[in-house]
Image (cartoon, rainbow, N blue to C red; front, side, top):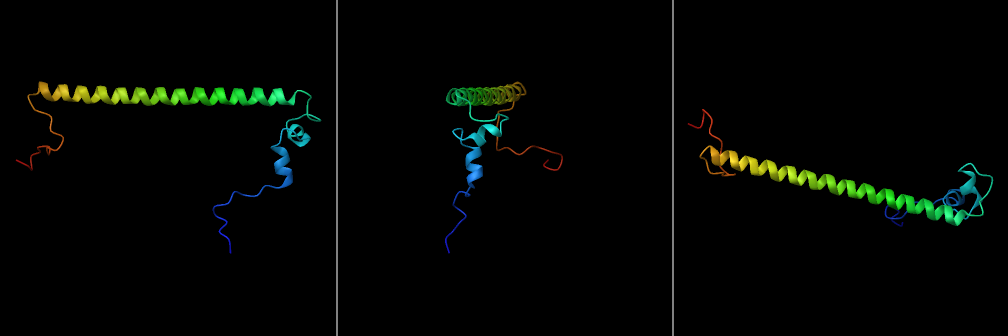
Length: 102
């Protein structure tokens, strides 16, 4: 018996036609009677718009990640400065002193 867990699901002819901009069913699903004459240009515009949107989303995620890294670095720097002001050297492995430790 063949392992079907790694294979892509098989699509029916109807599902394939709905994904094929060269087929009338693709356009009928979008409210048109048949494929428009400028269908290639429409698809190119859709792809370009989708690529631009994805690029903008990627840039926004990169900005958010950069901002988070900068905030983390600033918080760490501020934490080090506070420890230095208190006269304690920063030791990440030191156990905190509580009443039970003394």
